[in-house]
Image (cartoon, rainbow, N blue to C red; front, side, top):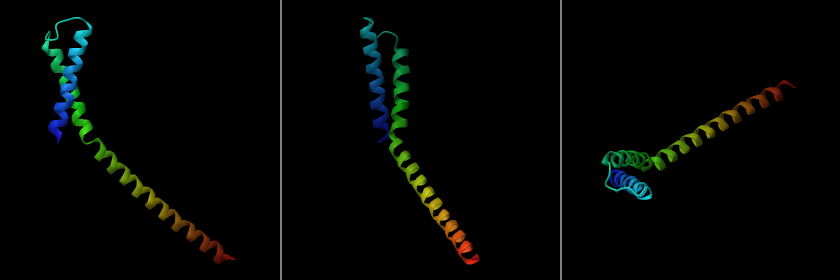
Length: 89
């Protein structure tokens, strides 16, 4: 669920900002613009991470098929060369 992922990561951004302000011994409700910026940034990360596994698996599948096709093509080329060299003698 995309919304849950985005909201979860946005809450991590909010907590990160509150922790930052706590370390600085400032009021945690000071400057809500900073909270919004971090929530937006972490929410964007959540959106990116949500589909990351599927994108990686699709890319791996594509590369596997590509490698297999190249191996089959090269096996055919090698067989042709063997047949040409064997037939010439």
